[in-house]
Amino acid sequence: MVTLNRIYTRTGDGGKTRLATGEAVSKANARVEAYGGVDELNAALGVARLQTQGDGALDAILARIQNDLFDLGADLATPRRRKAGAASLRIVASQVTRLENEIDQLNASLAPLTSFVLPAGSPAAAALHLARTVCRRAERAAVAFADADGTDTHVQALRYLNRLSDLLFVAARFVNAGEHGDVLWVPAANR
Image (cartoon, rainbow, N blue to C red; front, side, top):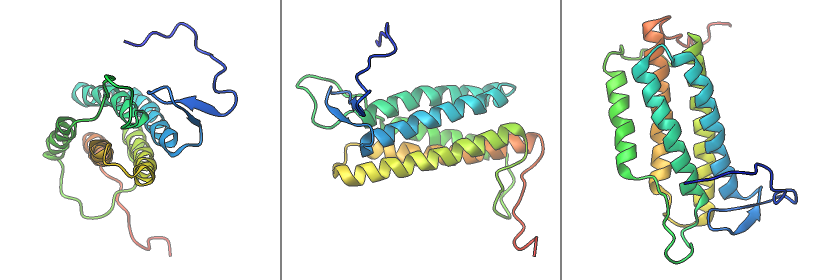
């Protein structure tokens, strides 16, 4: 359990932060960028949830995902080399499988796509599309970190981010299907 009695510590004033192992690294470190992107994604999902509270099932999915994103941040913040006996919180395959099942569940009632979808429609769909793009940016940062790190420690974390962006796309379509319908791209419409 985490206990935070004091919010500011001044330890980061010099541009350093500590990983889960206690190791000090630059705040510009690729690992920090990766889990920082996940933190930004979690905030974007919080904003999207303000718009999805009318759909209990979808909001429950997003609430669970927000919790998973803390697991994901811990995964990315924990180097493979850690103190002896210290447990690591890692994303596991069953979390990825759960996302796949939820994608299938939400997608089952949707019409097949006939064009690319513009990130628009209802306020909830627009917020979910924004969260999707933040997810893709977090995924790119996590891949860049994994490439630089050179280990396979975070394979499930990368899979999770990839599936999550798919889920957010389908969730936006799901919300629009119940309200405004998808806003489709019309190639060369403004020439």
